[in-house]
Length: 177
Image 1 (cartoon, one colour):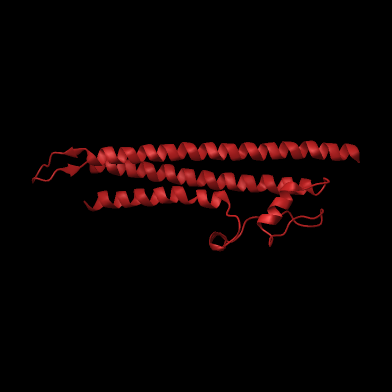
Image 2 (cartoon, helix red, strand yellow):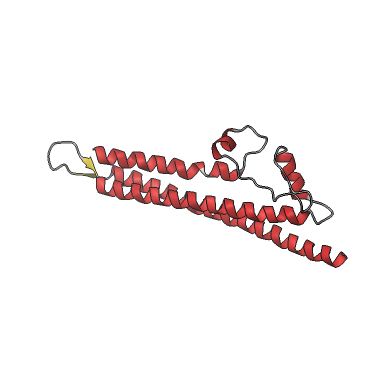
């Protein structure tokens, strides 16, 4: 039995380390896309201020083609960012579900206890007869529910959506002018 606990403890430590690395990768991805989106916003400012001489009339016009291409690129980058956040969220959920199950076979369960404190109404595994905990809930209800803790991924998913909205508005502006 002691050998079994030692093996489980080593698996547990590996799983926790992998979950931590996944969180660091997600943070790096967010930093990359935020930097890219900020740079693209600067390009929008530069392109929109670059006026071309009017072919007819006195009012100079902006480079609609350049702004359109920039807006489409921004939409694509923001959607890829959003999809990656969702991917990391699903992968992280699976990793923490495994960690929580491993904790049922160890003398202490710090992460399960932490989750119980953050979400007291959610089921947690207590022994092998209980299902693996799930953090997937109705997206709208989960977003508006008032809890002590809001998952970082729920908040970080808003940022790419804001960029998509900004670039769609820019694209509409370019199309109507």
